[in-house]
Length: 480
Image 1 (spheres, helix red, strand yellow):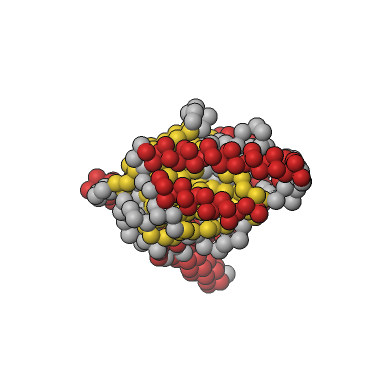
Image 2 (image 1 turned 90 degrees about the vertical axis):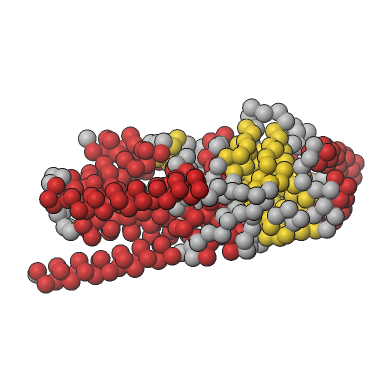
């Protein structure tokens, strides 16, 4: 029964379908299952259940055909069973301190996955709580690790009390401490929302998606060589699409926007025309008197890949950034080069830029907080299976780093949020034509603790886990 309950709840704890309460309940029942019966069969069965459910819920999220898909999902999900292995060997009926083993192991595991996986922070349990704004405020201090700790600790405490039959004299103090901690986190987060909302002037930000259209399919552009008249014809088509992009920039500027952005790889630019494109974009920014952020695919026909770039210009046409996407999507025909995201000063705000998948790497985006950015601009491109989850993940980076976020998404949800995670505006690519997002965004962000010490809680959990393991080993030696 515990396994069935856990499997059903896991189906709504990650991947395509997420219900926030399911992420709290699933570990309760799965840990209960693992801690009863013989260790190896229970752990193996739990791992099989996690994998089987994950293969269903992650279908389409990892856009790789079988058998590669099943191998990738196995590599992503198998490490998530490690906290249950640690939780299995906590003595039954032990002291309340032993409830820290499972959450500490969970945080250490998630951190290790995020640092080592080419998919970054995909699958972190904290993302299931993006609608719980009071809880989400804790990310400004601990990042998503604090939310993960609370969810896993809840499972450990419930199981501890369950094994002691919820006897008040045995579990009362522990339950009180757990409940008080959880309530305090929610109360402090709610107080931040109520008493310290963004204040001061705002800046009008407009972003849009204008796909190249069926005459310019990406695969054909990248894999089919062009020369002579065919290359001249391609140049004409690319220039015509760029004309449309700059016309949209002028329209949004005329409507009052001071910052304008278009989505990832919104313009395809031939490698030998990159300099000419930059001059043209600078002129457009100067004439429209806006700060302009552009997502650009720089390519040579037939080479099979493109450079995924972000160019930014101020309202005088001066270049602010020429950035290569730092974290290309595994398997995608894109190239990246840069190690750090750009942070630059604009007339309205201090701005950080990132490109789509970059925002799935919290340590990479922590530079926005360390450099005191007020606004994070993310040109992006998604697909149906990760919409709207991918945009909602990116908005967490704003809470962590104390900056508003605007994410303009081709084939997905575009959204703007303040530094506390409140949605200011949104536009759905599949329901809005043209897909234009306009938002009044706070000019000033907030300084947060997390980007200065992003590894603090994982390190603390790792240290605590080592101490608890050593203490347990010592007790077993003495009792032997």
